[in-house]
Length: 553
Ligand code: GLU
Image 1 (cartoon, rainbow, N blue to C red):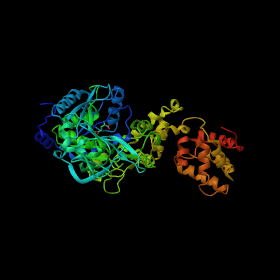
Image 2 (tube, helix red, strand yellow):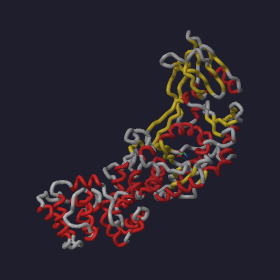
Image 3 (tube, rainbow, N blue to C red):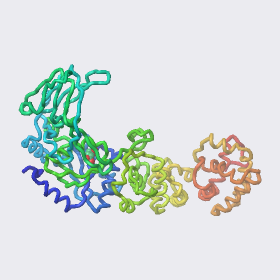
Image 4 (cartoon, protein in one colour):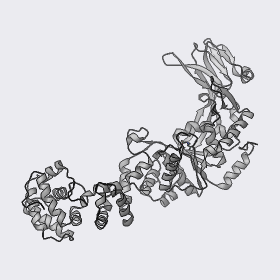
């Protein structure tokens, strides 16, 4: 008996029943973890936790060039960062190769697979879509079918399948590949006069014995169409006609098992009950259903997730912005916020909630609310959500996170820790990502960087220069710890210059910080302190080509 108990259908089912839900994340490590992949991990994790089941990790590391130890470390690292803890030891697919090969040998022995050599490349092992396909749960008869074929190309019948050329709209021959014989149950090949040239059933024995037949002059294939179908927990009923399928390689000529075999064998080994993965795998699933059956295992339930797309509806990639989990971590996103955002990318709780913590997500998660249509990645929305999480963080943790990022700023070596604490407290509710802290330099340097154009346009507004000069005088006397008093002084200077209330705020901000956004201007002045404020206002006026009334500090 091979590694895959071919006669263990019952025990497999029994095992699964006893074990409850078992799902897995089965990435092929490449050194970067795309958000689409990690979202699959996250949905698996949420489903397992919601169901009280097991979430397993299987590292599909058979691509030895890409699955380096560093790539695997990156994968484990981002999973840990996102809090995607797995149950049981991870299964490394390469460690299973001997059992995959044993399964292939068994399939060969049972005539469910055959050897096939391509010119000089050695023999691969090919899985045969079974002729007696209706023994496979999910295979259904769809009715009779007719396919037009081009008479210039002969129809070829071999054990590997049926080769023929279709007819294009312009009447040209379109040569396709070889379709599995099982797709052409009760096939009759006929010519232009309606004469039957070949009945597949009559030649089947010869064909399976290795004969290859060529039928010239055929124009029509008539057969009963069969399809393999399954009910996807997200997409509903999905099916694929067998005449559009081919037998497929399970062990390459170099002796290495291919993805299909390893993936299915490992799902059997790990006792997986539900496969939740991207919908780019739907085509594979049709094949895998045959493999599960051939291996004597009950297939899991499937849930294929919609892909993540950009604003134009195309697959979301690096070209559209940050696409790898590491990018978000490096930019200073919080794992909880990314987790929350990705959970709602293609799934919703059935109400309007968008900010949900891990426990709420676990409670609410169900596969029937995964949407069928592609999920649009909206980096702005993620940024805002991250900002909400940052605003609600423990202030000490926020300060520490921001401080770590600030260390890499050009002014990072000049940070006064007490001042940093005040700045972090002031900026927390306005911060969207930790890297925003790189813009806090104006609190720590003597002379901030000014955007001369913005400064000029704000400071050259009528009455502003005069009001700022007058303000300089009054700020000498104001208590900078008193935000209310600072506000009063500024409004008084604006009023005295005939400016609308509030209209001095932006010019003043630009003058003391060099930028046009930030915390409330009065709170900012309070943190900056008198000395820096009094020095910067005249400096900015000079930059704007305006002569300040008092000397530069
Ligand atoms: N390693 C494959 C991938 O990353 C398998 C996915 C799966 O079966 O979940 O696409």
